Length: 253
Length: 253
Image (cartoon, rainbow over all chains, first blue to last red; front, side, top):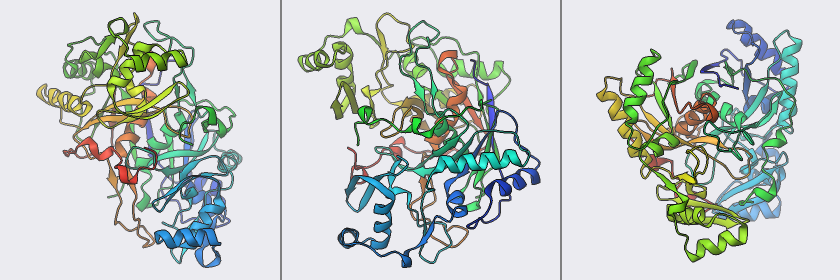
């Protein structure tokens, strides 16, 4: 299939500050309607993890956490907050690296990232932190379903977070949850223009769209939702686990 | 600065098959002109590594490579082409992982990737492979300069390649060379809407733009150039080394 020669990304403005219990689909529907940009077939809706976590009540006050001995000793060694370290351990199913004061671990959903996604920024102060959603793809599916119930066209929904990477400076926005699209666009077995077999070209299209959405989702300006329009992404049911690299091909576990 | 609420990405169509010695700036200028999309201030031009390598003659026929003993033994162990393994070693300044038949290494430019970017796909068959450009940012700068000489507006140029990642399936398009923009967009020291200090939020904006461009740069359809328009990226001189994570913060060397 020939690629679209053009697409665009736009912010969904006017979202209110999200609090626990909020119906994100209702808020997003209202924001889309207010700016007169209803969803169109082929769109992808991109939503930052932060508002999903807030709506789902995934905030914890550090004052309410009591650190175990392991977290306490590590925190003492590296001058960290032991309660935050305890939360990172609780959110992890496996530690990948734990050195130089940094923890990279695998979350229960299978994402490998710093601090298991426990985030101390932008959650209202007072020692509160946000945790990643328990099931980000279920969160994406709930938003998608809620939007359809409100009369919006059914489009894929991606929940994103900003992760660091080995070897390269800077964070990029990646998908941590997806509903309604294949996270991988595969060229396996296809043949290029010169007849050479493109053996294993599998693009992580959801991560690319997460990154594409980030420049309009400024952290400081409360734009937690964006729409990618023009790529004609078909609605298909896939599990986000297609994005988790299997152990046998992962040299950095 | 408030983010633009919208931007778009479009393909630069009609590029001919690139061969060694071609003037990429001339070809891109002609293609931009033919489709009546001259560059505009604030645009970013994204160019795939493959045409840069081709124009710079960075192709090698495997028949012309003689493998050393180390490459030969590894290739025998893992049923690889020893000549291709030899090229990977020659293109690397350091091996990061070398196991299960896979080589992840650091290129002379500092990029960590599979096979040092040595690529057997889409280069005309006959046992030819492409190597990464010797200095991708210099290549980007040359394209940028050549476009200005031809009367195009001066905009940043990114040279991209598709790299795999640890932990996550699928490739994403990333920057391996950049001229004319800061590869990192930093929020360090800025304060969010609730007064909480965003301590170390540095986004790898060039990688996000590389990913954003990829969906219109289909590997099978010979679209090696795209334009990102509407983000109002200022032209500034930066070194791409800002994208290479320093050893002291890299847990996966």
